[in-house]
Length: 565
Image (cartoon, rainbow, N blue to C red):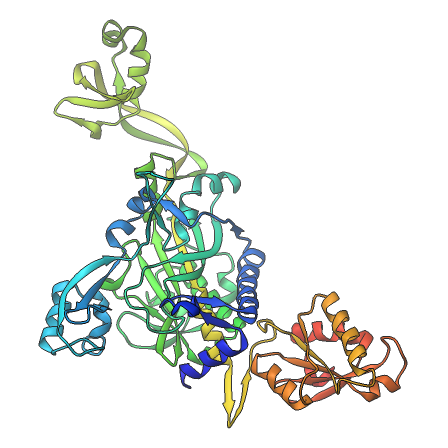
């Protein structure tokens, strides 16, 4: 299909609109219209259902503006960038790796020199005016701001929601009674100052994310639900590039997927996307190459869908290791580790520093006890050149080795502190939104149908009078009010022929249409008559009692067979 056809439908029917269109628009930004907002909410609802109800994860909501220190610690200040090149004539910016995408298997792994070399070798010029391109430069993608008026405190719009979870780990850990695993979800806006967003909703400057951070014991990457899905299959493209269909067990035993918990959440991503309406035949999981892996990732797989734009990432499932918590612990001096209790206390030997209290007393008087504590908190590895440096009252104190000794101590330990590892399924909501629409799009001749899954459809039922006269419209409005009172998203329409009304509902993905006709009026008054219910996908029709209509539609939403109602 042509992506332009779908985007035209989306604009015309109120799914998405180009942002600020009356002022010429801004590339990489879209507004969600009434139907788009409803579809977006339905996607979030399914994601929440899978992770909160299904897996028992908790949800938080954190600010979109973060202080610079957060991104210093996370590595985004140094690593979160793309390469940009400007046309020397028209000054239009372009993302350098996109200009050589046909000349290299994986251009986003190349540095500035290699990208420029490819451009020169193949005479790549400006796509707009065909003039010469300038030098390739690094461009950080975060939007910068300041926090507070006249403030020197720099802030950035978050490029991901994940950091809000990581910096809250101490609170979340206590909330979870200091136990692992700990699963946390968050959805919201993210911001990336993309160089040249040119693929509709696929590459946006302001976008929606649904991120999951699962904190696990680094020595136990199993998952209790894995055995139930161990023989389920996935379409995988490992880093060797050879696509294959493997069961989760085969992928683990062959070393294709690194660990059980990562395998489980790759599978869960597949079931989640298919539940939303992504075509399983156009879905695969591709492993990142070593040189394209994010700076924080130990392993990463992308859920890719086949669109009119080609294979496109919609979810990234990464094993982030202990990068994030270790970094924030080091930068903030906050405790981010997990106390892992042993089944039985263990007796261990360790080499420690012991203060010489008799020598400390005359030197430090009343502070000798505090200095002794500072010494014994450190280890032999902290001694350099016969001197131990400790911090006391904001000042550095140098303690010579004459004031302490190295001893071997035996002690019983109830457990040890370990830094949790993180498994992260990160969902691009806007890309999933577009994929659900494109995979549902059907067009034959001049007739368009969005075959959305009922759970996803913004409108569950269209309610029509056969004609807007003879009391049919009053009865249809009663039926409409009944459905909305029961929490069923309905839409009332009495304009145009019944065929055109069916067509309008089919075009926006409404699974069922309810028609009040003369037979309805001929039956008992009140809400005891029957109406015609039409199924979008089969075009079959059934007579249903008005009093049974809410229950019938709710059963259809849960997967009941229309032919059997």
